[in-house]
Image (cartoon, rainbow, N blue to C red; front, top):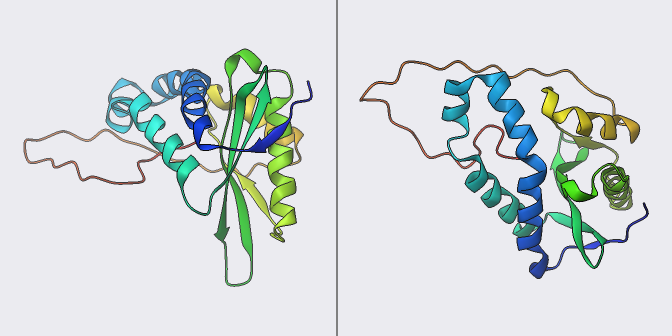
Length: 182
């Protein structure tokens, strides 16, 4: 399926947030199984609210480049690109977020968005593109898309351990909660 891809407009954001939450539902279910209930509860106490806020702020953030794929007259997929320095001489274009409405998945829209984003990164003169995803079963479809687009996986592992909660345990507010992205 060939879909037009265009720059995100402010009136697209609510639709993008809505379908991205449906698209990531299986991912968070997979996280719950892999992490176990206690660690999952501590990392993602309310994943839908947290993820909705992250999607909206990523779509609105100055400097981020955001595009949507359209079908049937509305956005059905989106990609967010963020440019990062990786050393003193080189920058990377990170495809920071990507989701496709579950009703439109398995039609090549995710691959089209990845390739479109990589082309835009190239046009910016950035010599490296990157994208991160989980190693859990819920992210297997995303990994297949990224590898089909020519990305090379680099194995990374993140470990969690639930520690005893005490009355003195303070929960600091952190803007970058682990996994509150993609």
